[in-house]
Image (cartoon, rainbow, N blue to C red; front, side, top):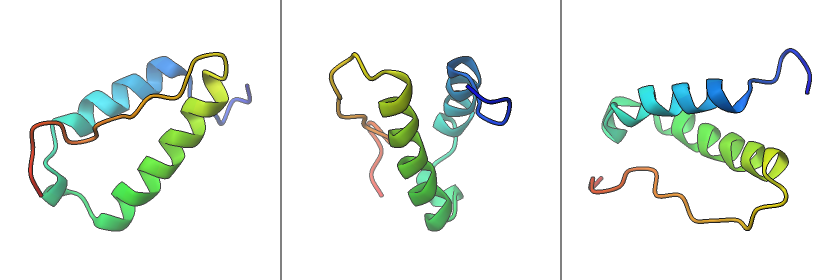
Length: 62
C-alpha cells in the first residue's frame, strides 16, 4: 500500500465523521465520488471477503 493510500483505520474514522452528517449537508458530487472510491477501496482491501451491500444513510430519507 502506498503512503498516499489511507489505511482501513483512517477510512473507518472518515466514515464515522461522515455518518454524523446528513446527506443534504454534503454536495451530491462529493457523496457520489466518495461512494465510488469507497467501493473501489473495499474491493481492493477486502478481496477475500464477499461483497456486501452498504447502506450509506441507514434510517435516513433523502
